[in-house]
Length: 241
Image (cartoon, rainbow, N blue to C red):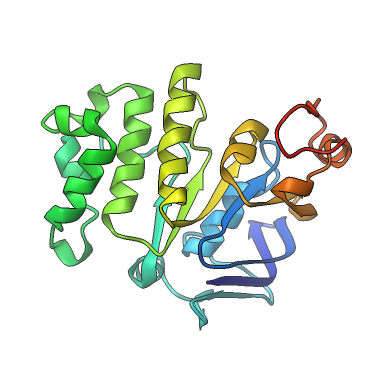
């Protein structure tokens, strides 16, 4: 579904992404793991056309080269985005936030019913302003908005950042339900527990490079500690000491 080869990206003269390559198959749930400032968000923005890559490199989505396409064209091909910090429209209602994602302005009421079924709190508060929701409810709204466009590939950046523990679990569960329903996804996070709960394969980024990649079942606590610089419990499901 997605194939990235030798991708480079810069902020000004600062080289942020250094020749990253990886691929995503249909129904994969890929985890991009790393500390703050290592290039996770920059990588996602390059895929989505929000930050054009520089130098050589290729980004193919559904076998089409998209590295030079504008963001709206990439979205039309079937990508959905849940940005870091949620970025909902605070002065628009929950309903308006959801339907604004409808393709070509045509609201798919069947899809809206699915979103409400998955997130009953959004239907309950559909006439409230997005800015009046709690952080966790805003995150559910951001996910629901992305799903309204019926993406083939859903890209999620730091989905539980800044949420209280109970809402972390609730948001994680909503993402898990989407993935178990067959959604192909890329999830960037610095929370190992989230990645372990959701992803089938993990790429660890350090200083703009992929330093370690492995399927979830074979992840090594020793290597995760080496590249993340944090303590990792070997009791986490799937981790090997």
